[in-house]
Length: 638
Image (cartoon, rainbow, N blue to C red; front, side):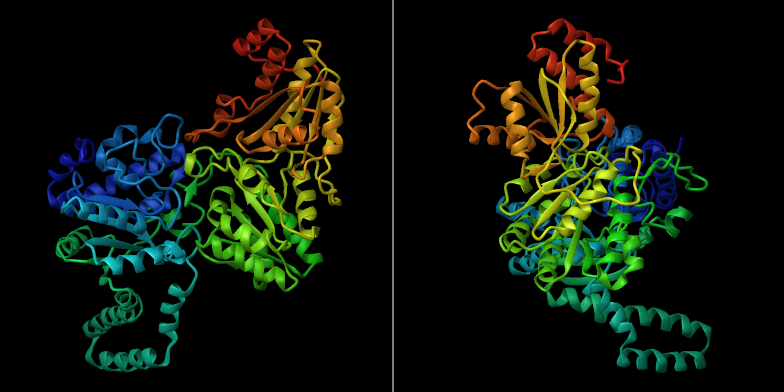
């Protein structure tokens, strides 16, 4: 029996002999690689913290002490050591383990996460609650260097110094967030390396040690590392009122355990600085940790992606923005630590002085764009929908209030799949459409996305375009394309019995539903709204008045979304009375993780379910039930 197979609980782990811990780390690493190669998931980040996690579980009493993981995409070893090994093959699968810590999944997941920069704040709150209850357990926050590019982390560190309560911040330093870490903290270390005083020290030390021999040279290197860290990271944290210890080797289990045992009874806030290697133990993940941060299923020998790649909406956005930037030197691009994920790498290489990665600082990204816009630039802010939520006030106060021409390229809108509720972009229509001066649109396919990017860039005011994580539909991509008229939808199918109003990813399912309905002698008109705001009242209102039966379809939460906008418009136009209207979209709940196509089916965002809703509106329950039970294959081209 392997060491890993003996661990079914934290108590079992505590029984493992110390000399077997290194072998255990190898077994865990191989288990993570083999699992993620089949399920997909966060690979490099998890491989980088195997020894660190083992040491934390060894030095602390996980049944009492609480570990808060920042972001949480590095928690697979933690899940294994807390009795979830037998379910690891379900990770990120529907009804399986979450890819992040989740309080409802395990008593050992102290805080549910998925976004960066939250751990220190949450840990401080837990520490203050512990003190209020007169308890004495330990509270730890495991924070990557990438998270220290976000202001919330610094706010929490500042507050921790104010209270002086006992807590430990484990600073996991791998020089990466998802992409290489940028910003002042990293630059401070780099500046130190090039400073005159430091380099005089290095030169004189090197001359002396070379005279004393090889052993002395090795010692000099260690002194060099310690001085650099003391002057940079150590003094930085100490200036904030936190006791600093490190750096320590983040892959030396026994050294880590010794360090944690030494610091865990120190009073007040403490920082332990561990140096780790993202992707550790997997050659291709070490060589390219950005690519293997969140991996699709892959060949364990070569790292080759096992899923056939198709052009994605992100790729189309990337190519289109590069094209437009060649024609307009005012276009600039901004991302928040996600140049790869948002597709801005190509833009960054082509126009390095016109592309800015601000780190995990979405609020700053938006206000930076506002400043650029004030001075005549055309900033494009590319951020995932779930992360744009973090800059809500800046969108309102700094951009829309001043009616500045800033473009928001909102990637990962709608259901994103296996990352689950922390990453689904299901609120974008709702939280953007009600903001004055905002133009909000969603493309039906990749060709229309190109038009919308051009439309947004040319618009003299705030504009957002929401597009999904998925691959494109493979529609023809004309070399030339025109911008759209703001607020103008299009009729895709004429019909007289029911009006299907769809937007974004739901346009093609609405077309397929209309084809299904033809077989039941129901004539459905289909409109691609294109714009959630402003709506095309001149198109939608007259058709609604004449047809009298309307269904809206969107990949967004119904509350406050596209369907709500249509209903509000019909009320304001005083034509809602007598109109039978239904809204198809996502419910008022957080959607769990699972394959995107499965989730779309479960929540009724399919052509079959649209057709079922239509048949129910016509009291054709028997026909509706037939589709529910057997599904439907469209047999006409319509």
